[in-house]
Length: 109
Image 1 (tube, one colour):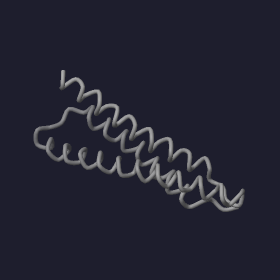
Image 2 (cartoon, one colour):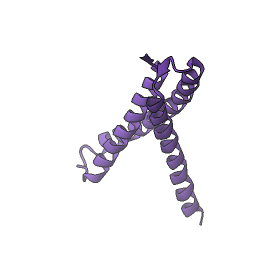
Image 3 (tube, one colour):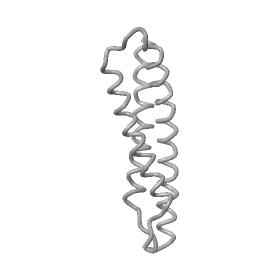
């Protein structure tokens, strides 16, 4: 049996989201030097954009992979990879929206 390619793409994108989230947390925890502050800020802004793109790709390819695996009726494997991509992508998007809603509610009141 071969592994579904969409499931692998979903899994890898989900891992990228998780890894880059950790990367952002590490950079946020170090006090930045004034010389490198703008460079670090630019890297963090870019990483957030890449995280959302990877989360969206992980979510969509995971859903497509699950549908393809179901249609193949056992000829392909990779359900766990697809589910990891769906959960990590949807979780990142959901919590990102939740943070935006919470912070916007604090600024409005």
